[in-house]
Amino acid sequence: MRHFDFLSEAALQRLFFQPPQPFCATDDLSVLGTALGATLYIPATRPTLVADLAKRVSHGVLSAVICLEDSIPDEAVPAAEQNVITQLRAYAESGAQRPLVFIRVRSAEQIPMIVAGLGELSPILTGFVLPKFTEENGSRFLDAMSAASAGTGHRLLAMPVLEAPSVIYAESRTEVLLEVRQLLNKHRDQVVAVRIGATDLSSAFGLRRSRDLTIYDVRVVADVIADVVNILGRADETGFIVTGAVWEYFSGTERMFKPQLREAPFIEHSERALRTELIARDLDGLIREVALDKANGLTGKTVIHPSHVAAVHALSVVTHEEYCDARDVLGTRSGGGVASSVYGNKMNESKPHSAWARRTLLRAAVFGVANAETSFVDLLGAGLHQ
Image (cartoon, rainbow, N blue to C red; front, side, top):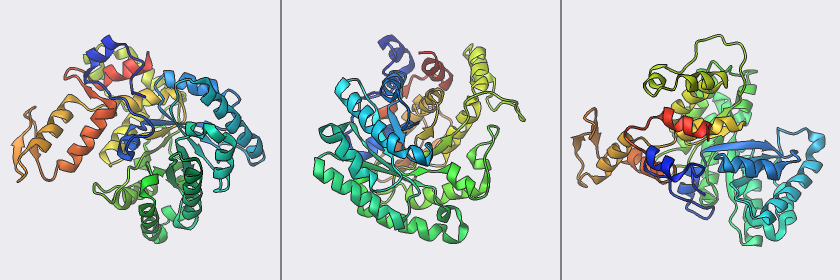
């Protein structure tokens, strides 16, 4: 798999200083967690699941979650389970290019049932998404995954979702997150990323953010994100990759506030029509939220519509300036020091900026480095109009 693989070689050369590198499901967890990008959620009841996945891969989706949990009604679970097994077996047998495929289960008991149903074709699965994850139920999920991996000889990866009420309530949050960290440390070789369930967290207070706001404007949820990154997303060997919350809007309705995209970058690149299109698709709020995700230490994002993918991936590409800074920081003598950036607009300190630089170069490997003259507007346009 390779991000932006739908582009022609000429387009890749025009847009990228360093093109994205291929990756596969057996790569190191740090590579896979970074490469998830925009993870598309799909209800497990879809009768055209195989065709949908194949089509989305051709349009840039390289990680997908098939949901057996909140996206389907309780009475549809048995049929959805069978549909997932049937459809994934057909997908594996088709030989078509496929993304990193995860299944969001309701219970630990579904894990061995699904793996057994897939049988020798179980390698089509990358892993499982584990909902409402706490220390109390997490052991059952992770033990079931370990047993399934051992039984098939195929590595299955976990993406626990932090969305239980005990995670958002102030009096229990720290204790719960510390318990989760202790549990995940015991299963570190299974955990590819930690996800944040903003919709469930918001529901504990009867809240839902509008498309004019980002999740960081919903203070009770923003506080959770800060604590999750603080405890689980540290830039040392104790940390995990933490992904951004879902963006749940994809069609235009009446707006209360002005669009959140500045006109200047689009005018500079003669793309006024693209800005209008992004606003009409409700993608201006998504773009702002992804930028805030990055600023707050999150990598990738849960999405529920294919139109979201281009925006998330365009903003995941490392800019030429970021790349130069990261290379300079890591190339500085081991004793530390400070130097002016290549772009002459900031200082680069080797010691405090080194963790950022390593993460940036990892992202550069999987999403590429833009040419100096390439802006996110160019990358958005390429993704939306391919």
